Length: 107
Image 1 (cartoon, rainbow, N blue to C red):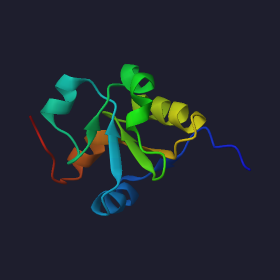
Image 2 (image 1 turned 120 degrees about the vertical axis):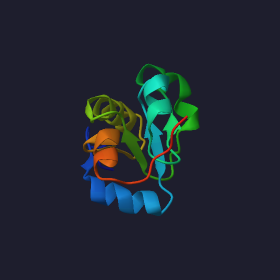
Image 3 (image 1 turned 30 degrees about the vertical axis):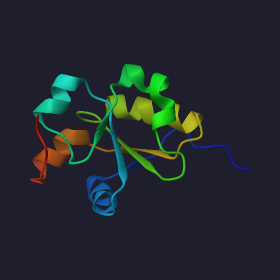
Image 4 (image 1 turned 45 degrees about the horizontal axis):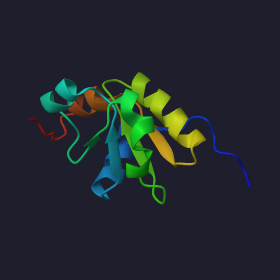
């Protein structure tokens, strides 16, 4: 069996299609960032807490990981893939989502 790649990333349009198909979205930003604006349906799990909540992350479907612009989510993606999870970093993160004019949630 092939070992997981340390890093996987998709562009915003590819992510948007997966999002429309009800993909699991993991937001690794801090709570105050998450409350300000987030991808609809994104599950908050600050980066530092990801290892403590591994049991809450799906193992059967891809997990799309976002942060503000992509560096924290890249680290989370690499770590999750090493744990056998099909994690995919979203290039540009939440900021790219907002800049594209797509809908978002607050609060």
